[in-house]
Amino acid sequence: MDTRPKMYFEDVDEGMPLPQAQYGPMDRLAYIPVAIILRDTNPLHLDRVYARERGLPDVVQQGPLNESFLYRFLTDWLHRPWDIRKTKLRFAANVFPDDMLTCGGVVTRTYNDNGEPRVDCQIWQENQKGEKIITGVATFTLPERG
Amino acid sequence: MNHQETPKEELKEVPTHPDRTTLIGRALSPVVYTIREDDIRDYLPVVGEEHPAFLSHEDSRAAGYERRVIPPSFAPFVAVNVLLRSFDWEKDFFFNYRTGTAMFGEQELEYLRPLYVGETLTIRAEIVDVYEKQGKRTFDVIQVSVTATDEAETVAFRGTQSYILFK
Image (cartoon, rainbow over all chains, first blue to last red; front, side):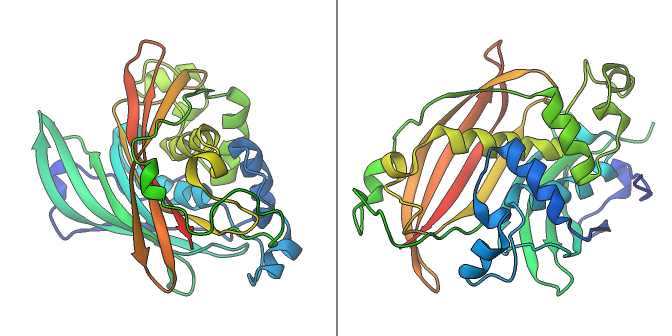
């Protein structure tokens, strides 16, 4: 259960950091249901020998799964999960089993869009070495106080 | 799909240095996708999604939704799953996995409404841009637009996904 305090539109300002969240260690056994759901049979995600033959230290976690943890970081913190409106993300590096993922962000703009209070932010995900895995921007709405 | 390479065998009809700009404007095959209950059931513990709205119609309604919603974190799974089925790597991208390397590039998604467990979406995609970039290696960026409509032909989400094809 996410314990980060919920915020209202009036509480956020440009430059304010979003409360971080950490996930992991990443579990290689999770890659099996993800491969089935995605219908992605690429052995790079499931076969360590295949991955090592290509110069990688281990199997590579599926990119959409990395993305899922970044989404969860944001939507767990919102009042309602579907208060998310947009994301624009760039995949920068691979995730491997046992990695820890830290997600964070900073508010870049608050505004009103056709009557809906909106917040733009930069968001990111990095591993335990501080390497950026995903960077990007997101837009969401927050409720106004009473 | 993060990074893929395969042995240098079986390269058939893919040109060595194809001009992929000829692909701009190509419409990919529409894909019909149903958000299945069992996929959501398998997905929730993988990412640790625990919001009650993801578990039942009643809890979703209590949270203000018309019926049971999926986690927003599953939406990129929908987009990726469908896009991977909307094109043929060789025919549509002039790309062969056995000799090439491909990665995700940028992804932009805009949600016009929540997505629901059990609903069926039709996803239409089109190659909207192709350009060459130079990093440590030279690569082509193929940008694909995607629009997901529901059974009432209302847009549920839309956006773009780019693929990086190393030369």
